[in-house]
Image (cartoon, rainbow, N blue to C red; front, side, top):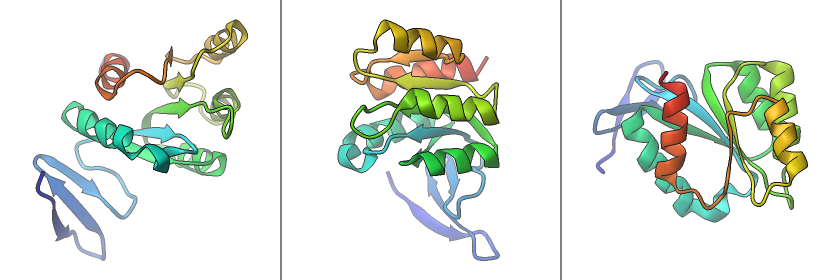
Length: 154
């Protein structure tokens, strides 16, 4: 994919990849719906995130990566998100805790929880917090994109 950098005026920068135009200054994405992707370990699995970017683009979605709870809260408070995918990792981040915080800020933001071998209690809590779905971490980028599209495009 060829990327070109263009000036948008007033110091803003954008990357154009085919039909996608992304504002690299942190503002809105032109023609894309932003989905928060929260995972504290995201730099360790760059291939998965590259796959996510590749699958999201044709669906009109853009992953906004954050890797700690403070960033999650800041992004949700800013608004403008189409949804949130919380990757729960017991070693680093508790997806249910983040989901509770998100619900205290935005009661209707569609959220998905990615959790490995969730217990019955975790599933019950996630459903009580109105999560759209609990997804296994082995789910590929295409399947995740399909789940998001089904919910966000209706």
